[in-house]
Length: 137
Image (cartoon, rainbow, N blue to C red; front, side, top):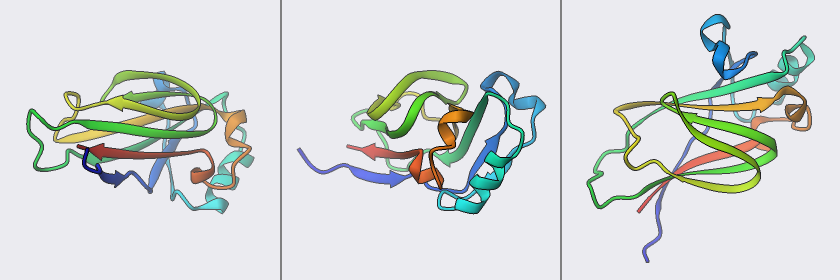
């Protein structure tokens, strides 16, 4: 089996101090994935119980009906919920997880990751919390 083509979903990420149901009421903060100070300042603020991290990305080119696209998430904190284009992918609790998003990708996509605010206090930067990438085969 050939090695997949990997597209890493690095920063910048937007962060909403709200739950996924309240995004329209909250203003996002932009955080680079390696920005320890930005994450620390956000976490020092008076936060709600949940935070939502979001990132936009375009559909990769050259895909056809035989192409498989996996969203791969390395969860380094605790329980998180994942949503792609307003469709819930699921909840994961630590570790390596893969989701087949081959038929879910649109020309422009929005990935949301919802975390408990307490879980984010363990990390120094977003890469301490999670890593995301697309793997295309």
